[in-house]
Structure formats: C-alpha cells, structure tokens
Image 1 (cartoon, rainbow, N blue to C red):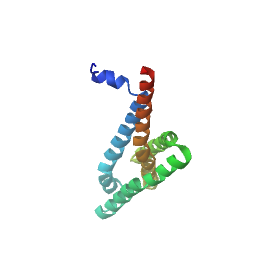
Image 2: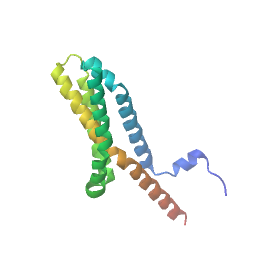
Image 3: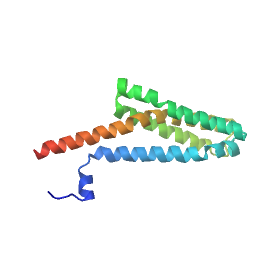
Length: 154
C-alpha cells in the first residue's frame, strides 16, 4: 500500500468542504476582528463611557453566543443546514455592510448609531445560524464524500 501525499489526499475531499472552510474562516475573521475593536469604537466614535461601552460589548457577545440555539432549531426542524448557512451568511454580510456604512464620519450621529447597532444585531443573530450548522454540515460533506469514494473503488 502506498501512502498518498497531502495534495493527493486533499483532492479526495468533496469540493463543498473547501467552500465551508472559506465561509467559516471569513465569519471567524470578521467576527473576532470586529469584536476586538468594538469597545474602543463605541468609546471614541459614539462617546460612550467605558462602562457603557463594556455593557454594550458584553450584550453583543451574549446575543452572539445565545443565538445558536435558534439557528440550530431552524436548521434541524425547518430549513436544513445548507439553507440556514446560505441565508444567514447573507444577513451576516448585510450586518457588516451596515456597520461599515455607520462608520462614515460625515453622516449624522443618529443615522450612524442606527446603522451601527442594527449591524451589530444582524451580526449577532447571523452568527447564531452559522456557528451550530457549519461544523455539522462540513462533517456530513466529508462523510458523504468518503463514502462515495469508497463505493467507486469497489
């Protein structure tokens, strides 16, 4: 029996796995990157006190880690993992677009605040649809891909 090289073994993976990994990388990079500067942004741009900015930061993080309960229920009982990941990823991008537009300094403060906090809510809720579904969906893809490859060899 010969050992396969790393590239050869990667070619056996289903193509969908790489899209899932890309989605997960982008989600994690944007979520944790934005979260790292959120308190400073709230203090400098919205002029919140340290304690108020910290409260909003923790409320955002709490919602982001509580919302996977709803995402898993939606995926398991109603729409399926693929559809939840697809649609929630679009909501996630919309949240980042709102947050980015809200950072434009020429806009009125009320508009900026509305855009920023709407974007944060969209991101926190969309995270709940991605976190519980991506790992299970990737595992399904790998399992089905290996099972199909095993059947072809027989």
